[in-house]
Structures are given as C-alpha cells and as structure tokens.
Image (tube, rainbow, N blue to C red; front, side, top):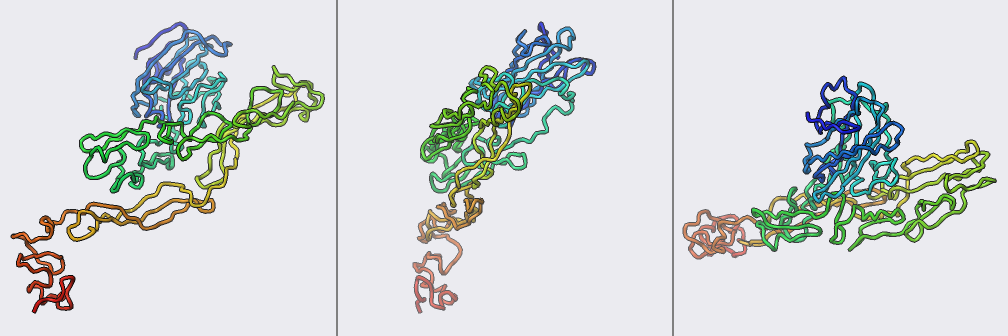
Length: 510
C-alpha cells in the first residue's frame, strides 16, 4: 500500500484496509459513506486533511488533498483512508473535510470532523454525505456540519475516546439504503420512487405517460409511445431531452439529484429557496414562496425572540432580559440574574419546513433549534439542542391526489369493427385520493386506444381471396368466394345461427 508522508500526518491511500502492522499502529481509518442519491451523483470525492498540535481547536497545518474518482459507481463505496500521527505523537489532532463533486466538479455535499488518536488503537471515524445536504452550503458555524435533516446539526468535534475500533470485515454502514423518496430518485419521470422498509422501489406507471395514446413506461428510458420511435413519438416532456436510439426513445432528465421539475425548470426539491421565512411549493406553472410567521433568528440577541414577517426575519419581541438584569449583546446573555425567572424564555428557531406525516395530514414534524437558559453565577447561561416537534399545516382538500394512479389493463385490444386497425383496451384504474385526512383507494373503469393484432382474413379488406381456408357464417366475409356472405351462402342454411333467423345478412335464400 502506498503511503504519503507529510509534516504532521501520514496518509495511506483509499482501500479497505489500514496501513501495515495495523494491530500495533496508532491510526484512524476515515470511512466516507453516502446516501444512495449522493453515491449515484458523485463523480469524485476530495478529502482535505489538516494536522495540528493538541490545543489547536481547529487544526490548520500541512494541508493534504486526496482526490478519489468514483464516477457514480455505487460499488465504490464506502471509501476508507488511513491517518497516522507524525512521529507517533498520539497527542496530535487532525481535521478532515470531504466534498462530493458532480460531473461538473461542483460541490454536491460537504462534511467535516475533528478528532485525534489513541495509542496502538486503530479507530474508525465515519463521515456521511446525506441526501438532504445536497447543494447545501457548508455550515457557517465551524463547530457544526450538515446532518440527516439537511441542517447544521452534526457536531464536528469527535473525541477519539468516542470512536469505535475499526473492523476491516465490517466497513460498510448498517444504515438503511434510503430514508425517503428522494434517496430513490432513478431520474426516470414516469416511475414512482418510494423507500419501503429502508430499500428503494421504483415502479413504472403507464398512466404517467399520457402525452399521447398507447403510452407505456420503460423503467430505464421513460415514456414510450407507439410501436416505433419517431420524431413525433419521441418528444421531450418537462425537464428532459429525448432522442431515438435503436428504435427506443431514450429520455434523459436534465435535473440533478436533489432537484425536481417545476414549470419546465429544474428547481430544488420542494422549490426550497433556503429562506426559513417562506413556505415553498410548486404551483401550476412555477415555484411559489409564501411568507410565513415561523420563529427565526435575526442574529441580534438583545432585541429578543424573532419571528418571520413579510418573507424575512423582521419581527422582534423586544428586550429578552427581565428584573434587574442587563442585556449583554457580546456575550448573548442577561447579566445580573438571581434565578431562572430573570433569564429569557425558551427561544426557538425553525430549521426545516413542516413535513406532513402523510400526504393527507394537516399535522407534520419539523426540526427546530431550542435555546434555553439557566442562571449560573449571576449570568444567564444558554444551552441549545436540535429537536423534532409537531407542526400544523393547512387542511388538505378531499379529492386531492395522494399518490400515483395505476391501471391494470386487460391485455386484450377489441377492434372498433370488422377489419379495423384501431381498437380499445379496457382496464380497472386505481386512484389514490385524500378523504377526511386519510389516503384511500378509489377504483373506476378505464380505457385507452390500442392497435389490434392483424387479422389474416382482413388482408384484402374483407373481399374473398382464392385460397382462404376456414368457413364462418357470421364474420361478414365471403369465405368460399361464391359471392354470398354469411347466411346468404347455402353452406350456412342449416347452421343454427341462420336457421334461427340469421344475422346481419338476413334469412338464408331457399
């Protein structure tokens, strides 16, 4: 294994093992993992490593860049990298920053951590790129990194005593493949993407291909129309390109993982504009950003708790300090307290939008940062924690779709008439709609245009051709080329269908 020696740390290249004599070595294996959506979108991972002496809270010496090409290969993960201290000095610290890059070498996701070593121990420092952190800027607070909910909630400092021992036989994470539909985005517009029991399921739905009759969903290439690929049947829909390749319409979504198509443009999932003071959604033609009154933080302590107004964090409640305390903006505290009553009330800042518990519910959950205060030695001391709390949404109107429709087709194309080249296929459609706060199934009959299989007897348009075989008394054709049709033919005279009154040809001639 190749080793790269630098001033303050020694690095071993990515592999599923540590440096030589692993059991006796003081080292840390950095294990870089990612949610499925990030893995499939990442073309390269850049690992930046910094060393420093203990006491340096943010190690910033001897920067070392290690780029690793993964090219969207799911099997390339997890990535591992060994770090060892300079001259075996286990008191040294290191800082690791990892960036996942897309095909344009733009940053998809970012994660960082600070830790150290334990003598003659091989430790595992796990870093993970989360789907909700796609295209999220690095946290302004250097002590935090992006967490599972897409907010700055993961503490950067990871004491070595809290790290697990590295096990080369069990490098991969035991976390599920997915936590929501965005993890399972297959970039095919006509499939329904779902996360079921931690595993991705992508179901092709023909009903999503309704731009023309006879549409079907190909799980890899998107909507297909007609029996052959032409410029008229292979037109792009929404945010995609389309072209015929080997008689297949190959559709490619232009939106990146973590984006969706709204009004013909690729936007962040949910039309998220990054402003906590707006509720974002995709309207009929474009993204809608409706102002809300969520709790927020304008960055000023002494004007008290803040709320959103007019789409910005602009409404403040006033001085948070009570009694004889004085507000200290620099320390962000109330000085001179005698008990908790002199300290500010609990302050809440909304971190994420209200996510419904299900598509028809008016109740949901959201991440909030809660800051509470206690009086200690005359000062109001704050402590913060990220919590998941219940939130309220506008009621969902009955009849609102809560899932994709699906039709079970009969597989039989009924011709519109004798020798017709067009037909109708019948089926039973299942719609998912909201009803009194629940998502229910509603079934109704459905039909679509189809092309019936060719009828050999119709090659001449129903006119007799010498050599035809078989004889029918109610098929509307001259089966024996004698000029008589159905019950007019003497061969049908004794058939029950004719002796009982005949068909459209009338009673037999006698």
